[in-house]
Image 1 (tube, rainbow, N blue to C red):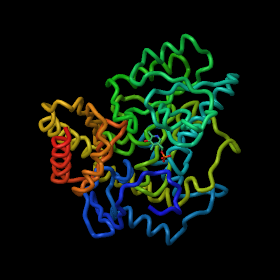
Image 2: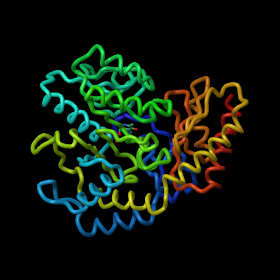
Image 3: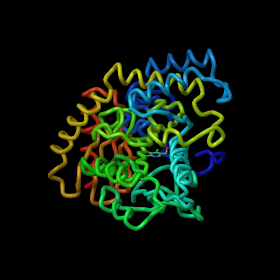
Image 4: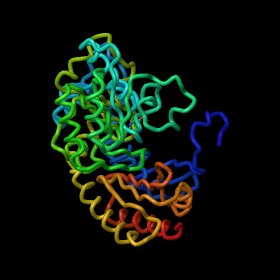
Length: 389
Ligand SMILES: *Cc1c(COP(=O)(O)O)cnc(C)c1O
């Protein structure tokens, strides 16, 4: 495609110009069923009427002033998110990576406040935390890091899903200040840990005085069947980051904190020109309120069971299918071989899907899809896999 753009993406040969609910139309007027949601962003679907109204109204009132002044919409979003999560304070950014940067800065400053001059953060293999230098250093994927060395120091890597490995670091390292994890690894291939993994990590963090920091950028905003994925565990992290679904496509990120972690950042320690502006916050308030009013997380949980059961019925006996798993409407079908080519095959059939970690078909449809649309995704994807294997 156009040479005027840096070649950071190997783009598919399609361009969309309109969307509605779970459907997108390309520049030739062809229709596609969307099981990607702009990578877990458009959880309320495309052109949601309430989102559109909030965006248009706010654009006509005030888009930006800066954090030099009070911002009503930011205050309201902060109140909403803290009430719904049980966290205490929020810093607003513009993306997921930026939200994680704030979390990493909180962990480091917290360490320095305790006279730990080389604070370390435990992170997981297979994780994805973003593309800035600190967040790519935290990411557990060499492909994301290669060529950008020297990496940011201060991360200790452990296998994902293994609480004992985290406890073992405690025995050998006095400089650890925090653990940073995704409740379910999205980019890493829809890796779902044992149900009590986060509870065990919470316990270790409590014993050691470490901050438990959860990257809920992909798992948050209803995706896994609760507003936030850690709510399945009945625990509260010390720090939680959000982005993706928070603005349903309007860029916004958030770093929430509670307890000691909520008091770490003071005047002059962090900031953002755009972060928390009236436009993004007005839309995010609308997204959160719509999710609550329409019981969207609950709907995602119910649909998840329907889709998982149907996929198991259609695919369980196939030889090349290694595993079928779901955390709400974050579904993964793991094959025994690389399957990236399925993405363009699906596209030709009017279906948008994604492949993560080379061998895992990742389905992340809008949470508002109907039963019939879910069934259409199931039959389309199942047929593709039957043909492929
Ligand atoms: C997408 C994602 C990020 C990065 O978000 P950006 O908005 O692309 O910076 C970080 N962590 C997780 C878990 C993600 O899924």
